[in-house]
Image (cartoon, rainbow, N blue to C red; front, side, top):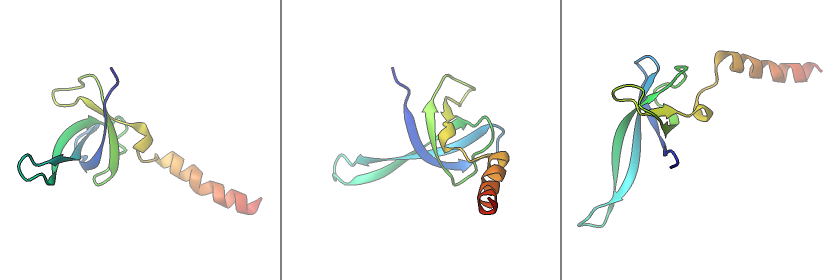
Length: 98
């Protein structure tokens, strides 16, 4: 069975290696037949503490990590580390010199 992947917005990153993500979905009202937004908060494991509040992230279903954490932040949406940022900043300068 494939693991579910959800997309949401990181709300809080105050805890170590944990981020709270709000996932919104559209559902049709049973009586009025209008689409309304429903949201749910998930606790996701962020191994490198790279996600900050307000970032858009993707989370994937995983084994239970703690009492509330059953999701992991996908690495492709994580912010680049300081080392990666430094190397990308140096590349345009090196290209201008050469």
